[in-house]
Amino acid sequence: MGIFGRIFGRADGVGAHAKGLDALYAACVARARQPHWYLAGEVPDTLDGRFDAIAAVLSTVLMRLEDDPAGARPAALLTERFVDDMDPQLREIGIGDITVGKHIGRMMAALGGRLGAYREGVAAGDLKPALIRNLYRGAPPSPAALDHVAGALDALRSALATTPLPVLLKGNLP
Image 1: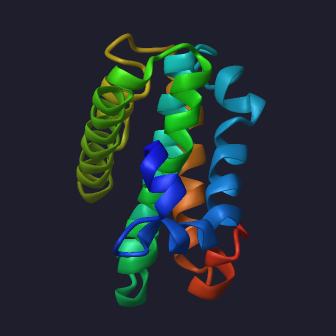
Image 2: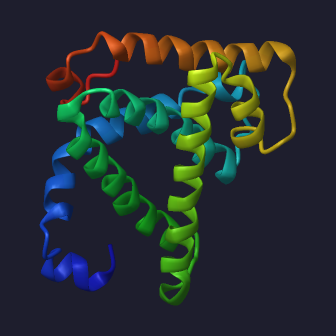
């Protein structure tokens, strides 16, 4: 959200409601920053690699929210919370005010593309091609690393499926 949005708030109130999902968003980021992704999973420990890990975990949580009719609005708000977090992150690394919007747009497109790819991978029963394309940006890791990441995301997805929505919305990732 831009400076005017922060000062005046959004007309539709989404920004204020998205703050209610701070705990869930923080839990997603914390999960994506766990060392096993970068060590056993060989996700590059770079700015792009960290973004991709967050996108993978966030996509898994968003898919869970989408599976519940009551999760549609929280899914939209969680995505809004992602945008609210990316704006200051970009500014912190030196992206200027004039181009922040373009970068946010690219990040949203990247998240949307990854979410679609992970949905397709889950539906096909094989997440690995989507991981190679999106998490590893086309440079396949070792088979053991790919197995590790696919297994960890599948385990998260399975555990999320049995987590009640109110528990999840409080930021309690299984």
